[in-house]
Length: 343
Image 1 (cartoon, one colour):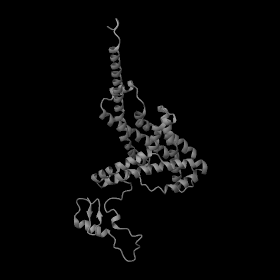
Image 2: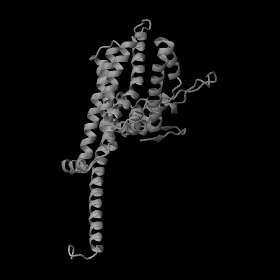
Image 3: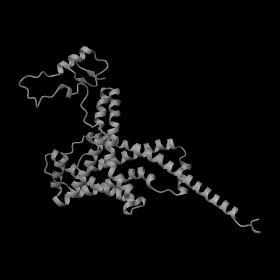
Image 4: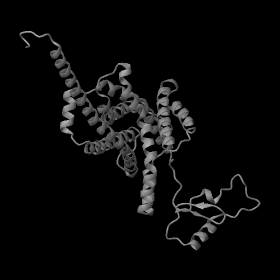
């Protein structure tokens, strides 16, 4: 609950079982008393500090989370493009300076959710609920370029499923390449080593990561953008008669597929950077990307629902066309001149 203090400061996340006297004593002990010599520019008001729980390290805005992810993807792409021009090390250093200018905070943190669950089930559930909109924005920002490339492939002549997958994977290649080089350099700096990026290793690893990327993208968008023939529509309706069940099933399958893809990509990123693959830090990273991947579920659910809906529409159109042709035939027969053959 939220409580307004006598001086007007509002304290949030106050436990239900704390008394008024206990809260007031805690607040007075926590609130610094300013002196004339305090530097006003550096003085931090108590109302800006969390009394209960940690300050959120993630944004609550889905748009900010989306833009932060998208800017990160764009920066990794730019770094990859600058590598042949300036060399891997200088391209990394230039990229790091530009990344400092990205002010958007991430929209998802499994660690923060787990921290709230350590305080109690209710705080954990509340934090999870708060991160759902921004978490979806974060995931969508990362996936957006590949989704757009897959859907827009016919505009550049790539109308087949294979062509769509190729363009989508190509869109993912440069960001994965840039991320791989960045990870190598960061690891080397943490170890106190000079930056010596293995560009070839980062490149062929990114090819594998990009190939993996198209699997969930095709799962999500394939049913939505691929034209259906009548026999395909009839087969879909026969095999998937329940739209609600199909929606839930496709959502779960898509989330599971995306999680497996992201964890494998993260494993490849750690491998090319020379990091352990199964230590505590690695498992923590896999859990983080796996949890974020669950936000692919709603996209898969929508795809499953629309897949059946589109199939039903195709069958209805075919039935309507058949009725229309039958009606025209009947009219023509009625208007035909009387002869020995049709009398």
